[in-house]
Length: 139
Ligand code: FES
Image 1: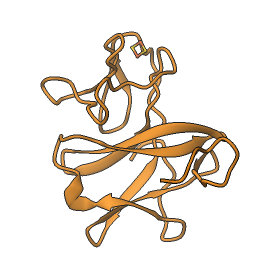
Image 2: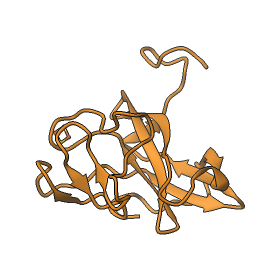
Image 3: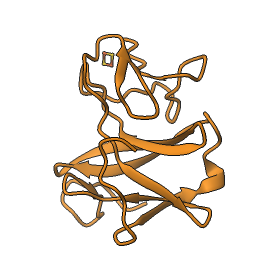
């Protein structure tokens, strides 16, 4: 996956079963800390590969899905922001249309191993620990 640190064996956090992410199906939405700020991220399967990004549009820093977990456009070709229609390439998060400029979505490192999808924290993207101030209530 582009722009994400190559995952190693250490630090993997389980996300879901591989079978939970259907090809171009609904995304799994999960919570992370981006530079210490609670935000949502999402993982989806596109062309057989699981990709994950912070759920934050480059145009205006807001979440992109009107319906939770629905990120792909009608043709299931691009990740689309529901607010003003910015389009992103699912494979690498690059802006390909609309008001998102030349940037790309913030990638979250993910990998599949033994039927499980895992994500990998980085210096900037950390797991939410529910005893952290402002992290919300435990499930
Ligand atoms: S907020 Fe996403 S396109 Fe404007």
